[in-house]
Image (cartoon, rainbow, N blue to C red; front, side, top):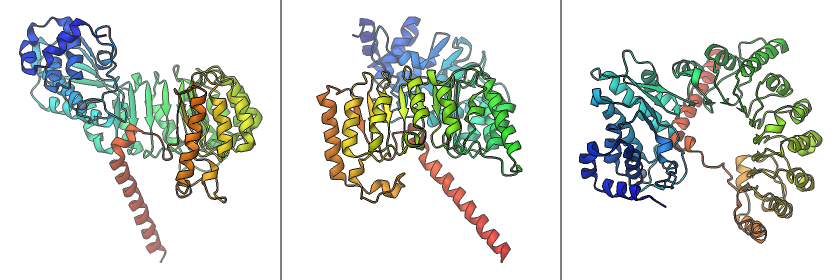
Amino acid sequence: MQSLRFISAEALVSHPQLAQQGLDSVAHNLYPLLFKASYLQEQAEVVCAVLGHWPLEEFRLGALLGPSADHPEDLRDRACRACLEACVRGLASHVLHGGRQRLRLADLTGVRDVQVQRCPCRRALGRWGRTELLARTCCELQAGPPVAGRPIEVLADLFVTEGNFEAVVQALQPAGPAPLRVRCPSFRADSLSPGQLLHVLRLAGPGTLRKLEVVHNVRLHAGHVQQLLVQVGFPQLASLTLPTKAFDMPPTCAPSPGSEDSLLTSIAGELGRMAYLTELSVAFSTLTGKIPTLLGPLRTPLRTLDLANCALNHADMAYLADCVHAGHLEVLDLSGHNLVHLFPSTFFRLLGQAAQTLRVLTLEDCSIADNHVGMMILGLSPCRRLQEFRFLGNPLSARALRRLFTALCELPRLRRIEFPVPRDCYPEDAAYPQDELGLARFDQQKYDLIAEELRVVLLQAHREDIQASTPLYGSFDPDIEETSNELGAFLLQAFKTALENFSRTLRQTE
Ligand SMILES: [Zn+2]
């Protein structure tokens, strides 16, 4: 229920002009309420004015939008473009007010990016857009006349690509005194050269960084990763994601096992120096036989481990099954490995070790077939905390899926299942793992019927709380959604350069 105070705040902000005129006479402890009320009603001008006049030392966006005694609704999943732009405008106007400012810290983190915006304008400002807007505002303030007072520290989750790189660098590296000092608890990089990545990370304050995601179009090899960890250093890092092929040898490196081992040992040693590292994602890197070397030196047990498509072997699986991390894993992705057929004992031992903690399990394209379902049910049944199970791309028939669903209904915390298109819906000769073309060639009507039957299995077990779906081309990813145009252009440019190099080589050989 809303408090009378919140209802009054809503009434005031519904008259934007009155609210702005009266701000100076509002008690300081009511500003958080006015902010949430104006954000809720999408009164952008009031949002901007409230922040411009902010009378407290701290402004923390996530905490202000979260549930409170005055207003229990959670607004943190509203990345409303109008309101977030107004926040940054308000911050700039606060700076320009000069002498009377009290604000020392503006924490702009804590907003979640979701697929459907619930706010009136329905337009989102994603992480990339927020980064760009904040960087440009910092640059504008730097270029303006000097302002009195201490600089305000701004916390923001940055997402940097080629498209906003220059602005971010300038914001982080002002030529003179800057009224806003940006620090980032989390940093995501895509479509940057290794040199650009190193440069911007050094400026972003790696000493306080908690989460680093380097993804897709940043072409790193093991030499770059080592350089990044050794030269930049991330003592507070808790979560690290590296892009595809991040453990490949540098092309100039002599291909000897010795050099390969020393590079990997050095990277593992650097990871071992991080006292807080609990999340590691290194999907699509070839790590055959290297898992003991990579994970052995880690100081803290991992809670998240993504080793999808890493070409693991027996030694890797044996290590995983008995390592210190196994009993702490909450999120595990081993997609792209023929687990049940090739490593049944170690895989199920690992699952058993993780059963008490595991929340999210992803086993896509693992060649799990009908004859493995009995073993899978035995392996999954102790995972009583499991909330999400994803196993797209496995050659399972409708019958096997029904059996599996019946067993999954017994897991009390399960809320989400991503299941493959049943094998029965594909032509007899369909090959697994499927390519995109093969993936799309299935009998939709038959699929709809079977999916309905599976839903009935859930309903009969009174498990309406479980969502089951087949997101063939992946789940919604707000960061990809926001930057897909730039990523596409980047890929196209890379393809064009490769073609030009190829034709130049051809001309030279002629
Ligand atoms: Zn909106």
